[in-house]
Length: 187
Image (cartoon, rainbow, N blue to C red):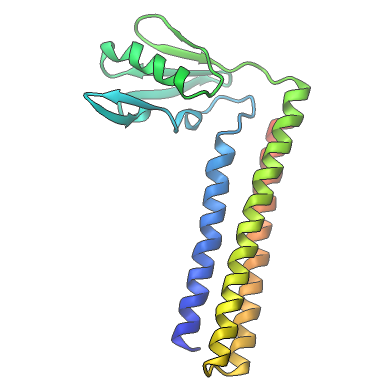
């Protein structure tokens, strides 16, 4: 197959994978009632004048399904970490005993679960739109290449491959959304 076509196909696949990666990252931040250290991935703390990810100044663990424990490597960081968690607007109330910070994840109400499912579905739909947008860009490039001398057979094969990618990544989006929704609705 034409080298330019291969580049278009590779870019399309990369863009679609980026949509999946983004969705995965967004779904981590939607709390399903079960504690996970990844819930704090977005928390940045000031450490010797530089904004640093929380996991680089402490160890983060989940002693049980409802608790996240944060053990700072330096004791003077406890107040800074606590403030950073509050400022991150994650809806957590950190509890600090002077040595370790604990975050208790409250159980979700039925209403909150339904709201979270709607949020997950919205993120899933945004990922699908991104995948379809990548398909449209690829097909537009292939049509332009057809006008510039690409054979119709090659263009047709490439369009079919792009559609295969679209189906594959749309299915991945559906699987991620379904998994997160069942996680949220499981009490």
